[in-house]
Image 1 (cartoon, rainbow over the protein chains, first blue to last red):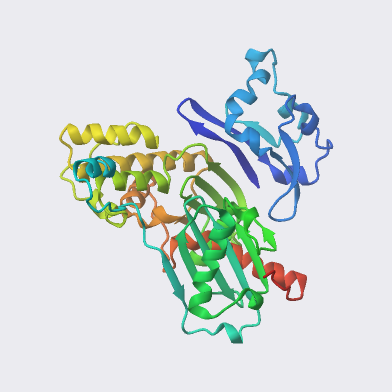
Image 2: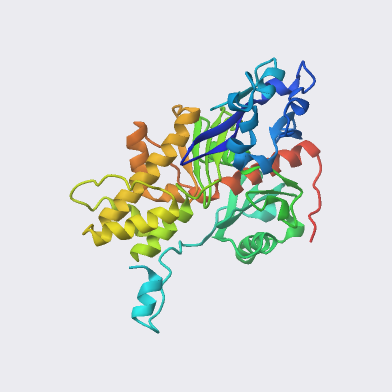
Length: 94
Length: 307
């Protein structure tokens, strides 16, 4: 399942999509959980009883600000979460 | 002229609630729950409406759809009571309850909470058949785009609950502002000589002031409704396009009853929405009741419901 967390507002679209099928047998031990400096990712059991990762609800409506420090303007050349997730399950829309 | 302004101009005049949509309670009189082996219930406590759906042996038996009250537990209880009064069914007769929606964790008698995303997909699969692949749920205060497989299992979803643009609440605000019953907005939006451009903002707050400006500029009420309906359609279509639209398109939620928005969405997408005889507003609760039926079968035995 592709889970898109985030929002669209007057300033743009800010979605993080997670391909949760890749989470089920994650080969890198859920490295995203520790890679995110703000610990936005969290383990959860989805509606179909699969153990997957999601974005904590408190961050979903402010992703543009929450992720800003990890964007090029914050000094990063690549996003820590997408780099840590070698199966490529995590994508940012912006 | 808004209802608040008209009250000031005509003090004491009866204040009509144009936004108030019709609550409904339905029972399939051809069935008898007393002869059913499995009675399961789905409760959808949304931000604007609450529904209770009763499924008997995996088939829709009854539902109650009403306005959400000031707290989720009472709304869930009242939704069930509506069905109880019509059928005589009590919580002790129910084998499994699943709660869903915004207030799903606050349904006092539910055994499990499941997200409305999964429940809407499951409900849509029942309502329009296994050809449904793309679901647009236009809820009271959020909007969801969902892809599902032939079994109604979610494969992709996107939700926008940050603003009320493109939601039922936005339409209620326009209904009250125009002083036109919400059920008439769809038909009235087509009663225009020339289709107007969409209002530039679908933010409910800004759209309200923009609509007032259009009225002052000489727009008829119907034209303003058409402009707002178009803006709403454009808004949700942009949401849908983010995950893509597949054949087998189905709309759930209260706005599915508004032909003015539905037909404009269909035009923008170039695809016709699938039809159903079942109330589009109960999709979430119906999906929850069907999940409850599956869970009951998996657990193998009837589970008593807390009273």
